[in-house]
Amino acid sequence: MNFTFNLRHLQVFEAIGSLGGFSKAAEHLRMTQPAVSMTIKQLESDLNVALFDGPGRRRLSPAGQELLLHARAILSQVRAAESAMAFHEPSDPSQQGGPRGLLHLGVVSPAHYFAPQLLGEFHQRYPDVRLKLTVANRAELLTMLTEHQLDVAIMGHPPSDADLDASTFARHPHCVVAPAQHPLAQESFIAWEDLAHETFILREQGSATRAFFEVLAQGKSLQIANKMEFSGNEAVKHAVLCGLGISFLSAHVFQLELQAGLLAVLNLLDMPKHIDWCFIHRRDTMLTGVNQAFKQFVLDEGMRISACQIASLTPSKDWPINIPV
Image (cartoon, rainbow, N blue to C red; front, top):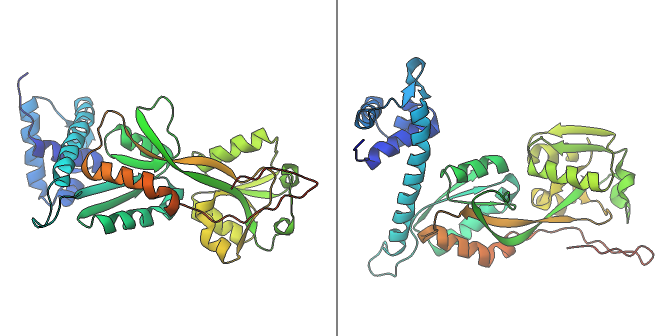
């Protein structure tokens, strides 16, 4: 089979595959729907394969599913090349070159509390950069990175078998929180078994925070008598504020409520617990231009920007424990 790929055809095809339809792709690309349909017909003719099947040709064929993966990889490399060239091309000929183009950052939900400041300070340095922020759960971001829908992300360490590079830039504290008026909020030192009869408000299954807590609770032999499940950090936090129970949350989630005295971090033995914040990108895609500049910015400034306030704990002389901060 001899053919030459047209990048515009691949861009249109990738938009249809990612957005889930011809009309949505047409709107996104600012094209008419007939123009999108003609583009796909030409691409199918060039390849001599059907890329869509089913009623109304709304579903990708097996060949279309395979091409979508290749199209995303090809377009990812094109964006990397454009970013690299934009790095050297000043918008004002009288000025030095610097990053331009699009920075598309993906973050897990706890990181979206500091990601706007991170992007804002980066944008102050490089005002020609266009910004896009995607907030998704860990599994979704890993899929987007794997399928070249995303170039860079911020989350915890990726799975060891993922073909991703992870650079640690800050610590990510997690705490058990309660309403400020909760009886346990006044206690100096709390043992894990003291929480057994408390109502826990947990994140939904699949949440990294939920998985982290379940591993921690298992290690502490904590059997929870009562629990509720809410989807999303904000829903959990507001449930705690309403007095429905206590919860295990990323410290980024409750900074304003802690400063306002509405929530309390419980003085629990061997808490807070930390994981790492990591800057993530694919190993097989060399970072260039704006993405490389942003990575260096995160490594230099990410710890400062993502810093959290946590209520200080003062160990008792008759119960010496090491409290990480």
